Image (cartoon, rainbow, N blue to C red; front, top):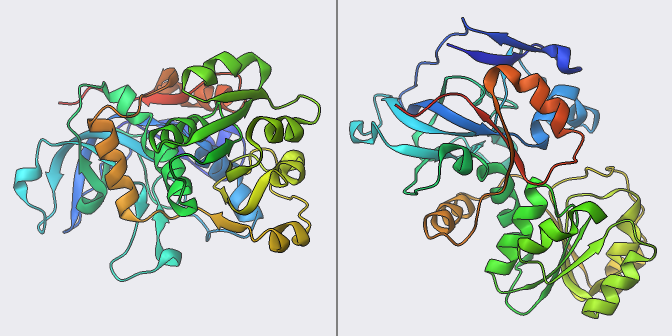
Length: 339
């Protein structure tokens, strides 16, 4: 089959396009999916460059590896323990593969620790292949799984609720834009930070207040608009973390699933404990989060935001453009039409 494989940690030269990669055979509890499209996310870049390994997360990877955490397609094969009536289903894939009886530390991520969706076929456990009934295109559906599931997990952990103020950083990216939509779906008020050039784009997602992330004293601007936020949903970290953390109300929540601005931050522990703030890391999401997400999509409660599409053979170019972060929305790789 056609596939783009990662041959080791490094630059774009480590991605190799092949047309002779073996088609996976579904195990007893697995489905074989013919991939139509697959979304791109930060995990692709972090895995390729070895960023996670530098932080001591995850084990040694086996190469060659097919990346791509967000495949959308149709079930064309099933293992012995899977109902044959699932053949032909159009599905979204939950990227977290959780061994039966295993804890969070046993979960593995599709396209990072297991072969993923930048190929014509991928095999995943049947429980991870969610039937989807939607008039959206394959490309539009592929823009949802990782970004929106991550965002929903962040809000789920923080218990974001109607009437609260939620601060979103990186609001023009895949997860950040998803946070805006999903927080508004919960009935919250959203103050979002983005570059000056993307303020109008983020506003169209429904944010109540959109601020230039580079403005002087942006933390004071957040406070003047909100009086303090109940939830700080952060995917940036970096130099702005310390001042923005100070915008959280006493008893508030901090939730994170990324650090695109830098993973090392300064935190005065007195700000944390004297204000009774709770901090949440959000990585391995519970299955109910993905199940809920599928329902939101089917009911039209959230909308896809696709920045660009590329054919599989131009994956290197897509990753090069993705890391520039000058587009609004999600990048999607097109593999082929559903049968």
